[in-house]
Length: 78
View (cartoon, rainbow, N blue to C red):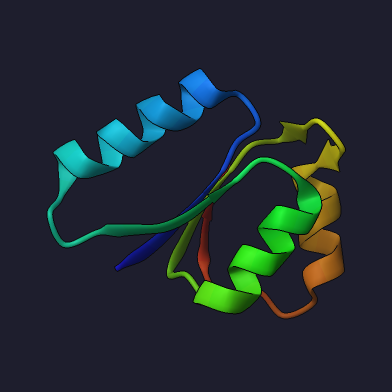
Protein backbone atom coordinates (compact mmCIF):
# COMPACT_ATOMS: atom_id res chain seq x y z
CA UNK A 1 0.00 0.00 0.00
CA UNK A 2 1.44 3.38 -1.04
CA UNK A 3 0.84 6.23 1.39
CA UNK A 4 1.36 9.95 0.86
CA UNK A 5 1.62 12.35 3.80
CA UNK A 6 0.65 15.99 3.18
CA UNK A 7 1.33 18.01 6.34
CA UNK A 8 3.02 21.39 6.79
CA UNK A 9 4.12 20.89 10.40
CA UNK A 10 7.40 18.91 10.38
CA UNK A 11 6.81 17.48 13.84
CA UNK A 12 3.33 16.21 12.95
CA UNK A 13 4.61 14.82 9.65
CA UNK A 14 7.31 12.89 11.53
CA UNK A 15 4.72 11.57 14.00
CA UNK A 16 2.44 10.37 11.17
CA UNK A 17 5.37 8.66 9.48
CA UNK A 18 6.19 6.85 12.72
CA UNK A 19 2.58 5.81 13.22
CA UNK A 20 2.35 4.36 9.70
CA UNK A 21 5.52 2.35 10.29
CA UNK A 22 4.22 1.03 13.63
CA UNK A 23 0.83 -0.04 12.29
CA UNK A 24 1.90 -2.13 9.32
CA UNK A 25 4.95 -3.23 7.40
CA UNK A 26 2.87 -3.53 4.24
CA UNK A 27 2.55 0.23 3.91
CA UNK A 28 5.18 2.38 2.28
CA UNK A 29 5.26 6.15 2.63
CA UNK A 30 6.14 7.05 -0.95
CA UNK A 31 6.33 10.81 -0.46
CA UNK A 32 5.72 13.69 1.88
CA UNK A 33 4.66 17.23 1.06
CA UNK A 34 3.86 20.47 2.81
CA UNK A 35 2.30 22.67 0.10
CA UNK A 36 -0.47 22.38 -2.48
CA UNK A 37 1.96 22.20 -5.46
CA UNK A 38 4.04 19.53 -3.69
CA UNK A 39 0.87 17.56 -2.93
CA UNK A 40 -0.35 17.74 -6.54
CA UNK A 41 3.04 16.65 -7.87
CA UNK A 42 3.34 13.77 -5.41
CA UNK A 43 -0.17 12.50 -6.17
CA UNK A 44 0.53 12.58 -9.90
CA UNK A 45 3.96 10.97 -9.59
CA UNK A 46 3.17 8.25 -7.05
CA UNK A 47 -0.53 7.48 -7.49
CA UNK A 48 -0.93 6.64 -3.79
CA UNK A 49 -3.50 4.27 -2.34
CA UNK A 50 -3.97 6.46 0.76
CA UNK A 51 -3.38 10.17 1.36
CA UNK A 52 -3.05 11.55 4.88
CA UNK A 53 -4.05 15.16 4.27
CA UNK A 54 -3.76 18.15 6.56
CA UNK A 55 -6.82 20.40 6.41
CA UNK A 56 -4.81 23.63 6.64
CA UNK A 57 -1.54 24.03 4.77
CA UNK A 58 0.67 27.10 4.55
CA UNK A 59 -0.57 27.97 1.06
CA UNK A 60 -4.17 26.76 1.17
CA UNK A 61 -6.44 24.02 2.43
CA UNK A 62 -6.76 20.32 1.86
CA UNK A 63 -10.21 21.04 0.43
CA UNK A 64 -8.67 23.27 -2.25
CA UNK A 65 -6.36 20.43 -3.20
CA UNK A 66 -9.26 17.99 -3.49
CA UNK A 67 -11.37 20.40 -5.55
CA UNK A 68 -8.56 20.76 -8.08
CA UNK A 69 -7.91 17.04 -8.50
CA UNK A 70 -11.11 15.99 -10.21
CA UNK A 71 -11.37 12.21 -10.05
CA UNK A 72 -9.93 10.99 -6.73
CA UNK A 73 -8.53 7.47 -6.95
CA UNK A 74 -7.24 7.08 -3.39
CA UNK A 75 -8.54 6.70 0.13
CA UNK A 76 -8.43 9.93 2.08
CA UNK A 77 -7.72 10.50 5.75
CA UNK A 78 -8.04 14.14 6.70
